[in-house]
Image 1 (tube, rainbow, N blue to C red):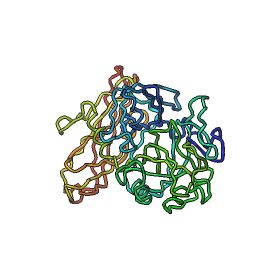
Image 2 (cartoon, rainbow, N blue to C red):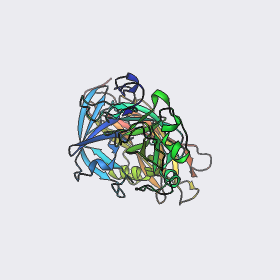
Image 3 (cartoon, rainbow, N blue to C red):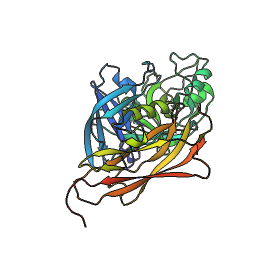
Image 4 (tube, one colour):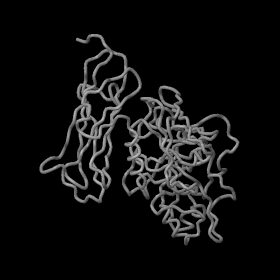
Length: 401
């Protein structure tokens, strides 16, 4: 991750283990590497499709967490069907062949359309460097997970129309977030100079993606808002905001992220389709689930919407959150919270919660899932919350008083 003013060795630029970024991973495939991010179900990583341009769909995922370094092989990879190797729909889902480390954060999606203008935290394993010199192409001192910030200035459609459709590549309007690398001066404010979207930047916190950051996350308020795709050095007539003539993530260049809110349906529905043994009707729901002896397994909650839907052609959403009973989050299960969306044509979906396996004899324990705040429909007259319970069954033997 290219940063400004201070060196990449400055701790302000490091995304160290235990600081909330341990779900940001290094993804390797076919001799290439990029970055990825562990999603909310703990089973899949979202990254850039162009990491698989070499033709192989094999991959390994390296976790760097407070409990150490662990590499997990992928069981399968899915590239977005509309990916065209030109920056559009540049997304891939990588499913893990075994459980992710419990110390790796699982990230929910930023689902709102108000991300333009907000400051995002960028995290990745890309080459270090500075805005004044660009990425250090000869750097070989080992992996660094770095972080920086930038403001999501515009979407792709705004850039394209502002340049009179003169770009050599295209993407659906609204599908990409773009930011430029500012040094505080008007002359290197690329989007200001090119399309009158002026912003002097964030000072020493400003940064831009570099080679190796492909697939890396842009977080807004801790939620996943974008996936890093490409950088560009743009010129218009005599307007040359880039500080040099190279494409090297230096001041005056721009970068693009696939906009997660635009692609959330593809992400959600493909994750749901991949859950093993997920229930599809109420009689298949298991309300008591075995604990297991290691890693994590899933307990499923099946949300069937039988209330009043405002418009069957619109998205219906609910918020959900787990709650301790006799089971404790972090010890017996992985706490889960977020927003579930039922897309047009859907009336039900599962909510997975990871159960933590161990070999310690203990009593059967339970936890709850609360579902609230329906948008686009209602639970029924006077109903503001739905609650379900799951029991984690001790399968370790022994007697517990």
